[in-house]
Length: 493
Image (cartoon, rainbow, N blue to C red; front, side, top):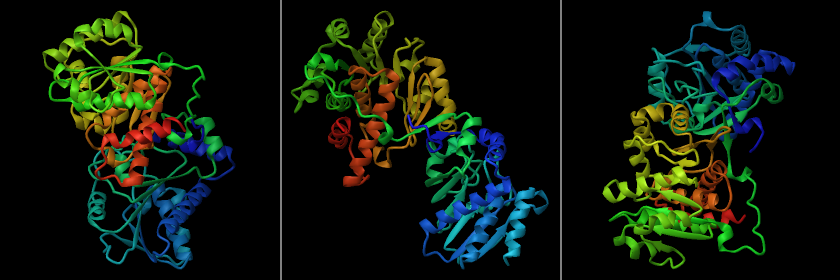
């Protein structure tokens, strides 16, 4: 895993509690840190909007506003036309924000109050609210944010889009939808998953030159992961054979649902599993195996023998929830309770699990989307999406398993840490993507990776393949099967 600060996620309190001490250890004043933040934001402004000449800076009253004053001053010094609108109470400025405001005035800058027209602005700098946002927004912030959301003007947010709750990505009633967000010192959890990932736009990070001292004081709550930072898989021995690459049993594909288990099985083969058997409803056998002669079919009447043959099992894609499905679900769980083997539960296996009172052995992998996660925890989907990190922790605590929570900024709970994937794109919101993912992960388990390793590596590989597919042909219209050539390519890099 990458060790740099740019690949770690810190709760807002960690940044607040350790920022000043980290700056002191680095021999940097807090005001100098504010100047660095403003300078980094201005560089981002020039990078993304090099031709913009009319800048509107919206300031609140916290240190976030101080950063905004610095951006405004630097923009004015660069010859840009700058309007600064203040919503906050000057009497509540910190000493550093007051200094930044005074320097703006000394540069000849003027400050106006809301309401103001946005009509002539080419870029808006959002320095309204920082990471301390809690509860519901009050006037005039809620009205300003709503105005920004309805304006067709790009927004650069400083540290966090105003109104976004830093640790969860939920909004305090309303939140700015930024085109870019530049965040400082530590990346906040709410910026990289769920709705917060959408609200943040392009995420830019600057450690303000205190990375070493900050890392010595603060404890990350999660790890950001890009597939390119993962090591390549080891080469196979020259005398390898089918059995040395594992035996995968894929169970699902109920009547009328052959596609899901077919995708899982083919993904397992393309990711490198040595042998793959598919146990599906008898009516689907021909459809599941059509065009894939390498796939072996199995009869559910021989389930006990099949479970004994397998080195690992995936249960759920296209399984359904009828009597046939319930029988397979219970038989598999009975078996792995006494014969420990890695078991991945997805799709309807998760729904059957949610409806049952069964405990799971510790060697399981769960891969729910938010709807399945809500059923597993007995809550609403909004509860999951309002705090995806909390939901992930509850799932891991309840089931003692490796847990992958799907969505923008997929989250994974391993035994050691929480991981946030940076790969992936909206084109993945199409049928069969999760079924494909199950096959990729279980294939890596079959080839010798631990449950934690296979889940992290497989999910990152799957998302990176989707990115390559999107780069080649676009996001819209992407199908799960489009990823298979890229999965094979990446697993052999």
